[in-house]
Length: 325
Image (cartoon, rainbow, N blue to C red):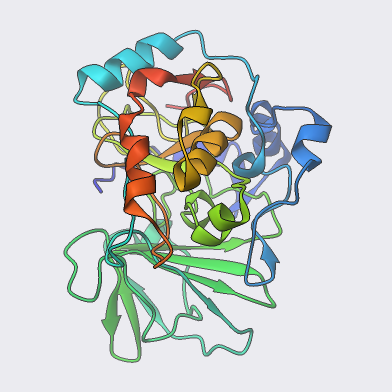
């Protein structure tokens, strides 16, 4: 994950003391698409007894039928010309694949967190992260090494990027705390544990959701090339390219309604339906069309591999607001 700084001036006008102002709230309004009935048709996702953001949070909003960006076709063409092919579930039967998370009690001991190099865009510790918390890819991983923790009771989400155990605490490149009951964004220009400044947990495909027959949120996706810009609710870009046809962080993609989800079975069909209703949100630089889930012994690779046949050309880009540069 390569990160690029955003000029501080971008944040000054809209964010005061790390809290989004009314002006920032107004900018998020284009992302609230779908009718009131659609947004409330199903309860929002929950983890550890906590709702994962309010029903009108961008992650939880239905985008089926929402208008497309005027440059939707150009963005999809650019992705496909830059090595994009088809969907790739970045999780499965192998427990080392996927991004794990853990739920802890309200009494969980808070431990210190030391940041380098993005401490100036990170939330200070201590965080209630167990010393034995699972690390993405395993203890010896050389990858992004995300650590995700939901604290029940307080209903707070804590996430670290490039995390390592350090004495009686943790060290990380960056980290963020999110109030799961709030729609407040990161300050504009700030990263999180994800390049886009977004939370990771709400975009993960979870086995319990699929087993219940419905995913009720957008899904996190990565692309190898992105532009120097972001669309709210993202707050940070991770590229120096000014090519406007490249996807910006936070852009929302949707599986076309014309795609026949009935051609899929089992877990794959449930995931594809979610991609038509809630879509995908660009959250990081990575392999093209890789979308993320939490590890589970319940995943069926034969089921999931059906999704690999879905070409990137089966997607379109929803208009959820302007690109912030």
